[in-house]
Length: 86
Image 1 (spheres, one colour):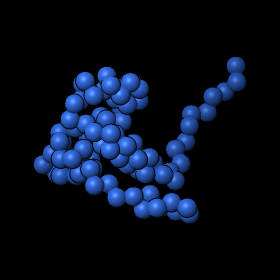
Image 2 (cartoon, rainbow, N blue to C red):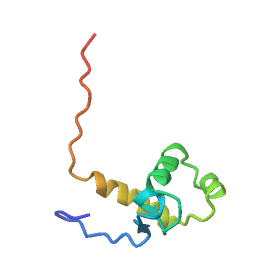
Image 3 (tube, helix red, strand yellow):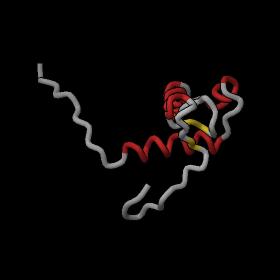
Image 4 (spheres, rainbow, N blue to C red):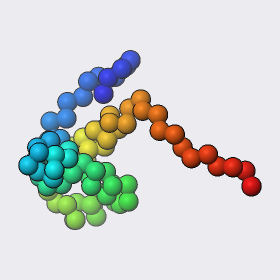
């Protein structure tokens, strides 16, 4: 991430290989995408249960997956649907 007060973060556990998962960002070259990890974290806040399902994941993998996802969203404006008052 970059910008005022932010350090450039190296994602040494996030890999992109066109031969693995169609080039989607993955964790350490495994067939486990950053998207999948972030989705699982969003739906399962219990890290022990997460580790039972994905024993190959380490705490640093989880941290970098979340940081990578946040970095990809940085400074992007996404319009929200307008809700008309009823």
